[in-house]
Length: 54
Image (cartoon, rainbow, N blue to C red; front, side, top):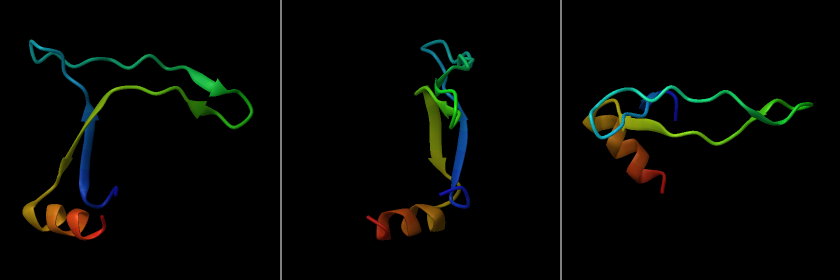
């Protein structure tokens, strides 16, 4: 997934980046709490690879 997707901060309705709040659900394993992000294919070829994997 990391090779085929650009992962960026989410944006609000005005297009301003939303800074995620850093919280962890599990202090032993350091599992982050869910947060919004923007994922987009890096190219048409990457999109094709992603769609083939479904």
